[in-house]
Image 1 (cartoon, helix red, strand yellow):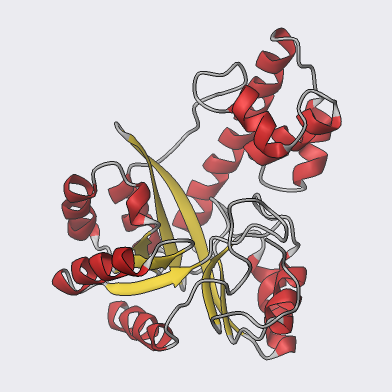
Image 2: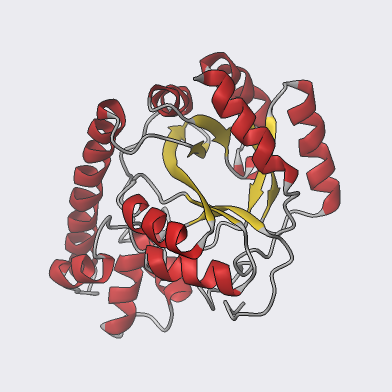
Length: 283
């Protein structure tokens, strides 16, 4: 879907990414698009980094857009991945910056190993090009783009399918926290921890209790293409456990497949006040 300046269906988007991680738009460009689409509240939640927060905050201040500083932490369980969003985090918190530095080093090492494995599999690319495409935190999308440029795949999606998913020659496991560790890290940085896209969690019933015990504050009830029945089911879970129901598009950039445009998921604006209140309660 495109990221054109037509009006969004929501004035709030609490799940977005920039070039600081694996998004297509620079933080300031993301703000410009948000303003063009009529958003009033935006959260930048880049994967395992807060490197884009200074730029996006300055741009949002100039544009009179409310910016909620955030992060999305990657965690690991036996059954797969669990992502935890953090809102109102302090990007200068030493505990957080130390953990993110370890993530950054691990991402670079992972990308280097991917390049080596792809070369051995007959799909050579240059690590320097992957790093240049990333411009910051390196992820699989940057490796995929390098594969497309080198003619080894026809599209980013094709590159993932051929080389970069589990079981394919370029796949490398990544360093992750456990879900409770991510929640505690976000809390230590002064933020509200929210479970991202809960339907991607293989065993939500087993995962949720340990997250609640660690201090989980919210559940992403309005996400991407979740339908109304899914929203209602998640809202019931949020109500049961006194969690703030958040939402967003998981926007990575205009024109990317299988993704709603910025502001394209209907998120009730009153959620922002609820999330802010939870943050203030925790302080």
